[in-house]
Image 1 (cartoon, rainbow, N blue to C red):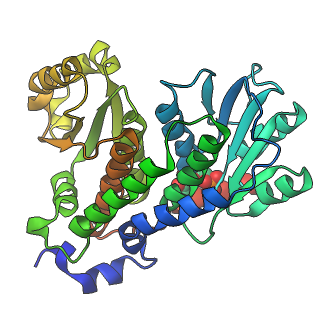
Image 2 (cartoon, protein in one colour; image 1 turned 90 degrees about the horizontal axis):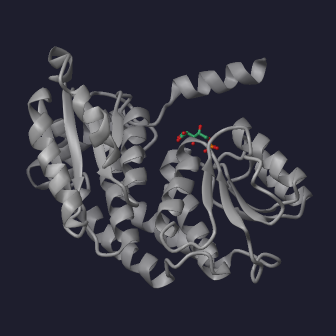
Image 3 (cartoon, rainbow, N blue to C red; image 1 turned 135 degrees about the vertical axis):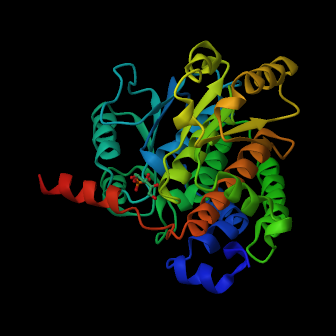
Length: 355
Ligand code: F6R
């Protein structure tokens, strides 16, 4: 029996139930939508902002990348994502700052947030607690409190959806509640296809994990809201599957990386190229992807094409996050790895705290 069809083995390896959290993504999204609808945004509604700055790291900061990519084409104000300690000089008191930290204790995010407070920026915190919650209460700032007890990367629905709902209420996002609701329905359908109970031969998420197997995945997207999702796949494969992975995006990669695949074939033959294809993307982008894959595919062990599901951008984003997330957990299990622990990140944070 394929190990991914062996629930006993899965339970043994997956000590903290990461697979179940992934399987329940639709429920998390639906609950997150309610949290967003109930958020108190008094004092923020009706204000005009000069820009939006998302502050956050890792699994939290990724939310900023996704929301920025969903809003950027319609937004009349600049949107930036800051992943580090420093707040750029142009972020001033008429900006909306969104401080994202699932734990509420990430030092880079807290440092940049302190600076935003000094500059008297309007701030929305999103967190499950920690110092972020204390600061928000002390400074009487809006906080969207989300449920605790998850790994930050497994709480992407809680981090993303309430913010999208709130930004829509403030008039800064055109992603509607109806679009989010429809996306949740799509995830619900996909959850039935990707569930552990669906055998390997009929389960695209298990097959994707097996396609990666012991190869090093290189994930290619194209300039769109799917680019941060390719980055998310890389991070999920790093953290859940404890596997190195890399990502890049078209068209930029055509101006450098494409040439880089010419040498070191004895190393890159252990790599698998995964690329996203959205049939609704501009024809020229899809032609570019196909030509590139033809040019470089012999330097990889294999190539895997991912057909993007969904009609709206939010459906495409969530369905692709979902597939990558659950496949990264299957990849961990396939290789005998417990998906939840991230010992190296925890050790680093502890050592830094001791300095
Ligand atoms: C852990 C994870 C990490 C954290 C990051 C920041 O599951 O995904 O990338 O997100 O270390 O911590 P938070 O999200 O608590 O601010």
